[in-house]
Amino acid sequence: MSMNTKVSSAPGEPTSQVNLFRQPNVQLVFLGRLSVLMADVIQDVSLIWIVWELTHSSAATAVASMSSRIPLWLFSLPAGSHADSAPPRRTIIAANLICAVLALLLVGFANLGWMNVPLLCLVAFAISTCRTFEAPSFYSLVRGLSQEGVDTQQLNGVADTAKRTARLTGPLLANALRSVIPVFNIYAFIGLFYAGMAYAGRQLNVREFRSERKQRKGLVADLREAMVVIRQQPTLQYIILAECLFNASYGACYYVFLPRLTMDTTGGGTAGHASAVTAFGLGGLVAGFFSTRLKMGKNALNFATVAWIGIGAAFGLMYFATTLPMIVFLTALAGAAMAIQTIALWSGLHAACPPEHSGRVYSIWRLGADTAITVSTLIAGVVADAFGPTVPIGVVGVYVFFAILIARRFTLHRSVAPAPTLS
Image 1 (cartoon, rainbow, N blue to C red):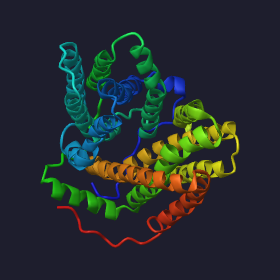
Image 2: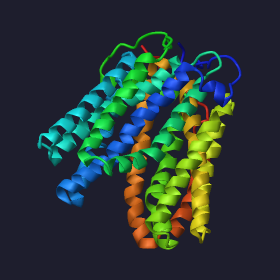
Image 3: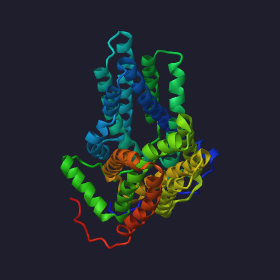
Image 4: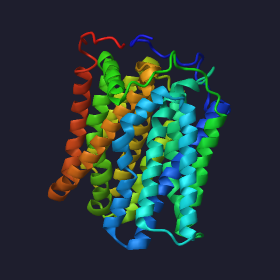
């Protein structure tokens, strides 16, 4: 397959939302991703609760939280290489089964009185490692799930809707469980949710989507091949560069400036921040659900560009917002644009990247995007303490507009020298 080959979606017009969710693969994708992402969200909050209950130490809580994020930095690139060389469904099933067993073992240890922070950190690290390998495999598998009347864009929309549903309902379910069972036993439900994704993965009807199975040549050689693919595809360059530039603003706005604006500047307190976060989730949920009717096709990058700029504008306009309801409204718009942006990016990646290399390209994109969020969040904390949140969030809106257009100009609108062919 040449580097410029487009992966076609299944033929036919997009079906309605009702008919779409009657498709077995669509139901399994939604329920499976909802299940695994509920497990992730509940584990994130439960881990903090348990460590705090054991230690009442913010430092210990931070260490435990970091233990579930370090695998992304360590194993993203090997996970992408693995996704391109192994059957993705097998990886999805195995990874989620291991996560389920680890979560249930932790419940057993807790009821035997063997619970401690190092054990929690070890289990969180192991679960996160499995999830790091699972993510690019699922991304690759989506190509093989499209059928008559259901294309990859719609499946991406379904997966995104499941993600946003989990983010909205996961913390509520965790809090409800905590009120009726010991906090340690919440991991039993986490294990069941991971097992749900393993079951869904086994039931999926997957067609062959690769022209050949890539042979492992070592991590360095695998990544070199992926970089050749990226150099030959301006579309991939734009997606990766623009996402990194955008996330440098998103991390600052969502994790630092927005909490300060809602809790402090407008006097909304924690309830005000919770309202904004809920609005962000609801906006994304609604937009993601109805995105299945959008015919992005070759215009996926245009949708992503408009969505990036729209998110930046929504945050930037908070410079002029003086009341909490206005900030909540703008946050809902940002959430809606974020859902469209995510679906458009996944669709653009699927269209531009050959199936044999999609896992590694996805991992490079994800690692760069998450790094940008982490770095910008750390810097934004210092900036907010020095200047407050209002002026910086206004500057961010202007930054996003120019950063995205400049990235588009220097990737999509320039001639690319021929890259060496893959051997």
